[in-house]
Image (cartoon, rainbow, N blue to C red; front, top):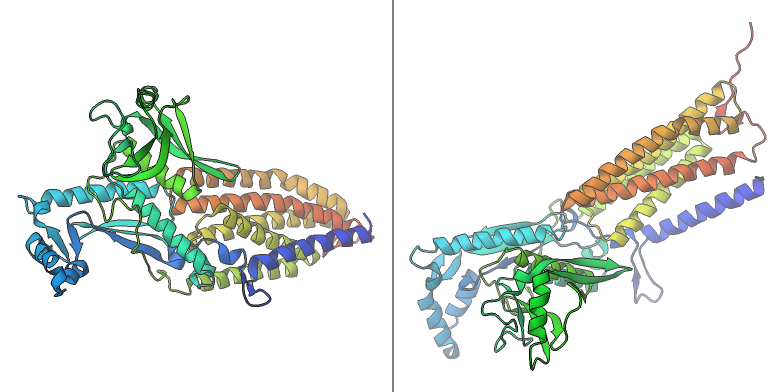
Length: 500
C-alpha cells in the first residue's frame, strides 16, 4: 500500500471518528435560536445517583394525608360544612396520617397495617421487574406506601434543555406506578367502564387470572406488544364466553376496577392461545408485569389513590444523592481518564500511540451511542464499567505493542514482528475477551437493576474492545506499508549487538 492510499484511509477514519465525536459530545443552539441540538451523551438516561428520584406516596382507600385532612377541616366555607363534618366524625389520627375508623376495626388497625405491608411487598416485586437501577418501596406511618424510582432524566432534561422529555419521563413513571399498584383480580367485562359492567365469563366467580399462564413483552423490529399466554382451559372458557348466543360488542380486560384498554370482539372466537396487543414499550412492560403478577396470585388487596384513573399526578423529583452537579463532575473525571490514556499512549508508542488514541475515541463514541440506543440507565457504577472496558482495549493493544517491540529487538523486520506479535498475543487477548463477555452477559441476563445495567454496559464495552483491537491491527498495516526502513518504525528498532 502506497503513501497516498495510506494517508487517505487514515484521514477518512480520523474524519469519521471526529465527526461522530462532535455529534456525541457537543450540544448547541441551532441557527435562529429556536431549537437546540443535544449531543448523544447529553441524551443518555441517567440513574438516580446522578439525576435524583421521582417520589410519590400512595394512600389506600380510607387514609388521608395530614395536608388533605386539614385542608378540608380547616375550610370554613358553608358549602363545605357537610364534608368537614364527615371528616371530623370519620377519621382518627395515626402519626401524620388520618385513618377511617371503619378501616381500623376492632384491632385498632393491626390487620389493616399488615395488608398495607403485604401490598408494599407486591408493589416492590413488580417494580423489580422494570429493571430500574435503584428504587425503594417503604411503608410510612403504617398505612401509606412511599415509592421512589430513578427519574431517568438525561443531562439535557435535568438542565431543563428539554422540558417536553422531562414531562414525558415523569408521565411514564406515573403510569408505571399506577398500574403496578393496581389491586384486585383480572376480569373480562362487557363495558369499558367498571360501573354498570359485568363479567362476560359464564361461571359465577370465574376469574380471568385463572386462565392466564403468563404475560410478557414481545419486541420485533422496534415494535412492541403485550404478549399473553392462555392455558388450554383458558382458551376454551374465553371462547365459550365470546361466542355465547347473542354475544356482540366488545369485552374489556380489567385489573380490579381499572380498564387496561385491551379488548376482544364478542362473537369472534380466538384461534391461538398466544395473544398480542400492540402498545409502546413502556405500556407493554407495565401491563405485562401487572397481569403476570395477578395471574400468579400476587393480589394487592387495597385501592390506592384513584384506582380508576390509572394515573399518578403527584410526583416530586428529588436532588441527586451526589449533588446536582454530580453528572458534570463525573463527566470531567471521565475526560481526565481518557486524556491520561491518550497522553500515555502517544508518549510511549508515538505514531502507534496516536492510533490507539483514535481507538479510544472510537470506543467512547461507540459506547455512548450504544447506551443511548439501548436506553440503559447509566449510574456511577455503570460509568466505572465503561472505563473498565476501555482499560481492556488499551491493555490488549499495549500487550501486542510490547510483543512487537520484543520481536524487533531480535532482528526481525517491522512487518514480520507485527505478524508474529499478533500471533503470539492472539489466544491471550481472545481468552480474556471471551471470559469477560461471558461474565458480563451473565450479569446482564441474570442480574436485576443496577447490576443488570452494569453488565450490559460492560458487555458492550468488551465487544467494542475486541472489534477495535483488530481495527488497530488494520491500522498497523495501513501505516507501516509505505515505510521504507523495514527495521525502524514508531520507535521500534532492530538492535544488533557488535561483534567483539
